Image (cartoon, rainbow, N blue to C red; front, side, top):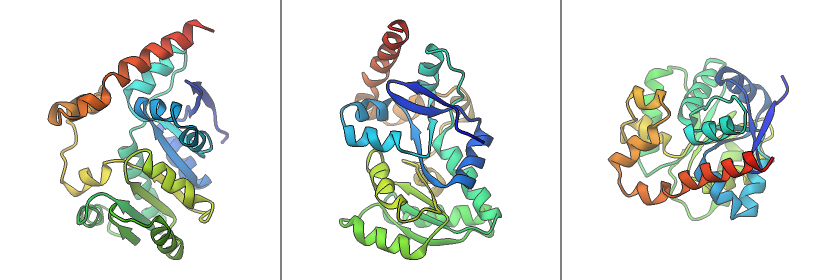
Length: 237
């Protein structure tokens, strides 16, 4: 199965279905980026971040913003929530007897996330874990390389998690690595995920903003500006 890429704001996005993305990530390895408008905006101001996104082995549209943007450009690409993709990969890798590493979140949260995942996936084999509070990336990277996990879940927030993954992926060519933002908090039960109706409508960002108003400043004006830029891209063709 070859990648079928579409482009938005200078960034390639895979047009896989959810199931195809899971299969690709399992069989092809490498870095997975779950892209959203905030990341695109940040990468447009940071060439190094942009290069990391465009060198990833898989880039999925995480969130309604990118899905709408692609639709404006004439592409039918369904969003793939990073938290759902991460969970599906844990299930698939565990079912195949593969090992997992989890890095990120506050102290104790990653342990609770592992505990809850272990209840759901009895054969879960976490060979390395660490919270997201560390000063020396090299020490963590050395430990991960030594553990040699098949699946590496990194929840450090963007763009830190993407840089971390990029710096380690060439040293672990047979591993699949994905940045998952706040997913560990949800899996640990520390943060409540948006109700199903918000998930279905692609409005998890709105639910989180209503629960955490401080997020408003971060999301706006990024989202409307993103849509305006995409409209400009569409009509400049």
